[in-house]
Image 1 (cartoon, rainbow, N blue to C red):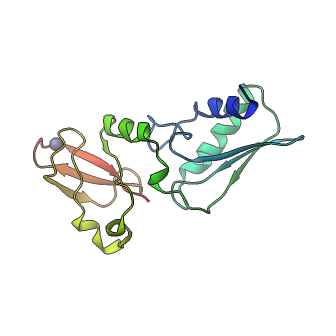
Image 2 (cartoon, rainbow, N blue to C red):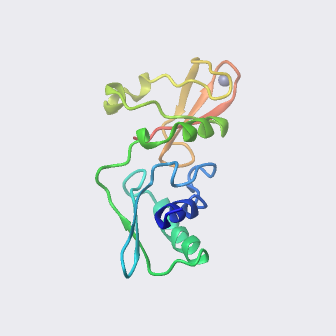
Image 3 (spheres, rainbow, N blue to C red):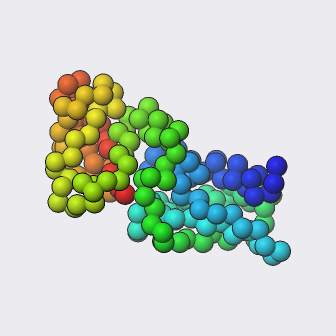
Length: 162
Ligand SMILES: [Zn+2]
């Protein structure tokens, strides 16, 4: 295995604090691994600007790589191109759903209109019903919205940030 791949594998130990079932590689947060003569540069893109979880992620990357025996690690944050939920792998979407969070839809024009969020119908991750309603635009974190399924009567979260 190439050294870059080994590092990527090690980075899979770092979970997204927002969604503990997903690691930062399948989230699409890790954008690149660069090995120079003097250091290892890990490039990451936050899921949304100012996401407080990024500080935690950065520290965890440093810790995990140190444990794996890598030295002189630098974590670089790049904001462009901005992270979108399109970077989530198919596997990541399935895991989100299994975790009880409705996975984000692929970005379309409706999503890009900030005034359209009330209209958006989200399928219940438990029973697939479209008979759901938005309870709060903000769930446990700014990235999630709270929904309620009128069919199976369970609250669930929708990962909404794009
Ligand atoms: Zn339901």
